[in-house]
Structures are given as C-alpha cells and as structure tokens.
Length: 181
Image (cartoon, rainbow, N blue to C red; front, side, top):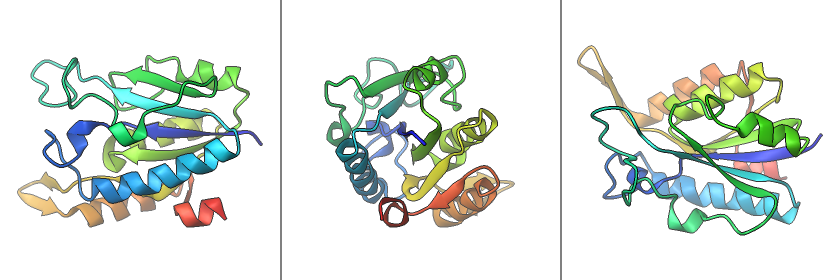
C-alpha cells in the first residue's frame, strides 16, 4: 500500500514569537522531521500544506508575512516527490488540488501530522478517511493550543487528548516511534 506524508501548516506563526504560538511547537517539529526523514529514506511522497488566511480580519497566516512561511527547518527539497499545497480553509482537501496530486502519485494511505490538532489536522484527517485513504495520524507529531469556551479554559494537553481520542474513529493513531519501527 503506497503511502504519502501530509505535513499540515507547520508555519512560523505557530512558533515562539509568532502570532498564534502553539503548545510545544518545537518538540512537535522535531518529531515531524524524524517522520519526514523516514519518508525520504523510503522514497515516498511528502506533501507540505501551507495555509494562507484570506478571511477578513484575520490575525495570522497573512499573505506575504513572515508568519505564513513554512518553518525554515521544514523546507522541501527540489524533487518530484515533495509538493507544497496551498489552502485557505481548515480541510486540506477543500478547494485544493491535494486529492488530484495524491491520485497522480497512486497514493492509497495517508500519514498525517502537523498543526493545529483541533482544527486543520482534525478536518483533514476526517476528510482523508471519507475519501478512503485509511489515514494514520501521528499523535506526537501534532500540536494544538489551549481553548476557551463558556469562560472555561481547556489546557492544550487536554485539547490534544480529546481530539486524538475522537479521531481514533477515523484514523489509526500512533506515535512516531510506533510508526517508524
């Protein structure tokens, strides 16, 4: 079964001094880099998803800003098997050519990681399952942040665990270590 790696929104605004810093983004990046190395060594495709926020009043991922750029440690190599997919919505498939490019590469299964677990990772993983890609979600290669609802703050580790638990219905959820061994 031919796999591809989907790296969602690992962009400067999610890191220290960015406009939407996540919980432990650098640790997450280190796991993503290990995962990407596994795909490169096995000569499997890597898709970098890059979000451009075009909503009126948006505060991060603004076009032509430093924050919208992919993290400098994660830049793709010039190759026929690494692609950048630009998106404007949480679901990486919605109004993009991701599905078409996956089909051109004969991809049968997606390995998904990136940022934010509760938003773009969630939306993309659910859609990948609905499209038949049998996703594997790499839990420790995803990052989120604390959320507030009804004047109650849910801490980032609890947000992460809640979303990962829900996504077990749509994906096989593993760690980088479990996936690469």
